[in-house]
Length: 426
Ligand code: GAL
Image (cartoon, rainbow, N blue to C red):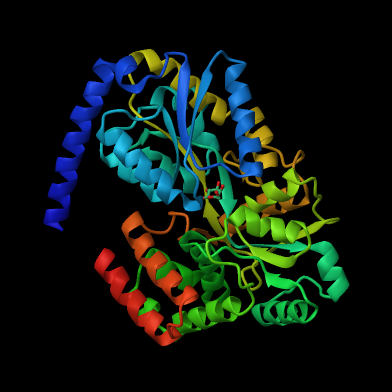
């Protein structure tokens, strides 16, 4: 523990002197103009790019230019690797798409901006959900602007395929498996999936919740309780992951998530278990909820929400670039932008005072589910997307989940490895 703290401090000191160099020669080091924001993100799919376009145009209408820095890969692991090297060389972007514990980690390094004046003027404390504020502030200081609230315990289904095969929206796990077996027998791919660690983990979020419920999810994935991690319930979680493995097609390894969404969109597959950014792909393809596709909570997780909120963490930049940065942070949390962006992205507003009027049926459900989950204390952070545990622990989960899903490890061995790796990483 002591060693860990020392390393962190040293790293923080290096970063501070590096960012000081960036401040003194801001324009030279970054190559970013005063009226420009340089934004690092992983929104590269059709739906994501379209949603991000609403921010670009909002800012451009205010005289702020956009310097795009996309790094593909859901969950943001690749983007975070690029970010580390940028900050280490004293050249941090203006704003970085970031999730949960990663924001707090960067905040602790002392290289993030202070948004408190803006937050006070805009009343962020009053309108941003508490669950998001927890990840947007460090020692009471706002460092990041929340963009949205997504959640991972969703399933997306092709309506025509379900009608043809004659299956209704499944209510519980066994019905879901039964429905997918029927789909397989009818010649469709039951579950569209991409074998990438973060996608396997996204499915895992829902399976843990469906199998053990909210208390178990909290004990195992948030409290990292060894008994929960090595329990029979966790063994059942891995057995269910194995059931799902038998319902994906042969070409699933490495497939991007949006290509898996496309399989459901074009009727090759019946279902995808994915966060509601998948809805952005359906909408981008001109599809309508209810008519062309259905959205429902992972069977067995109704009433709970495993949330994942994108934020733009703001980094310390030279004085000349602060004005553009503040304009961006302000725009991100404006009610107009929250509606324009989230209706396209598939997420719901990061403010509690925005009406659901402009949202489609799935969006209205998402907003309602979120409210209910807050009221019944059934809102919990997504492990897959960095809101349940810090990156080192998340990665320990990723390794075991993906080794089990893509190999022939038994559920009993997976549970043993999981408990050991998590202990090691925490
Ligand atoms: C998540 C992110 C979402 C989404 C997804 C796939 O980590 O929070 O906004 O776009 O990755 O890229």
